[in-house]
Length: 320
Image (cartoon, rainbow, N blue to C red):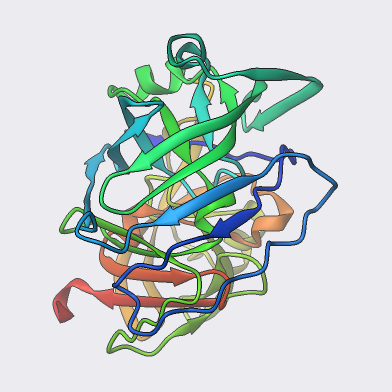
């Protein structure tokens, strides 16, 4: 079995300055304009975003392909496939599209995007015009990388990746079970009929209970599996009699690596318990806590994540 673990981006490429110009009718109360996120380093790159308010608004249909969410967008006036991946620090565009779409780019000498199996060189694609149907339109810089190997491993075209530089500045509503996605402006009021879960400050992380023991996991919507734990976390919470098997994990550069896979008897997420949950044991970056929680589990919920408010709602399928 091959799992997809897409873009673990570990380099600061740019900080998108999101200027919210229009607020959609989906917000129960119009949010106040949001200040630009503070830059990690000075940058001359910026982005502008417009959320649809009028009759153009409608939920976006997504397709789940081998456990990751893909959707159709328009890039530079041309149809394209985009992948949802908040685990990517920066949004990406395939280098092969730059010339056909007339998108200017520039090199970043000595900079690469790190993956678990290597590194991908990139260019900065300047002012990429992106339309996400029914949701928003944006002009933003992206990291231009060769996505062909990853698309080949996935068995589906991937022309671009929507990353955390945008997703951390909107309210993300995802119902993978019904194939629906909404991207609302930061500050949009949501009121699901479940208790909210507090996220770690500035990160899509929250505490999950594994066999009665807490672990701090990072939500990674580009990871097709259920859970990944670091070897240290596994030693702390894994069952002593657990049996492991070897599986393959495919990364952004198309390379596959062998990882150990096991099963956890009970995992508690908020107020919900899941049993016999698959878990990979692999090295985890320190910034991601004890591991990742991916689409293998998140797709069992309708989720609403507001990173600016540090709040997550998870509505189990059985409640819908």
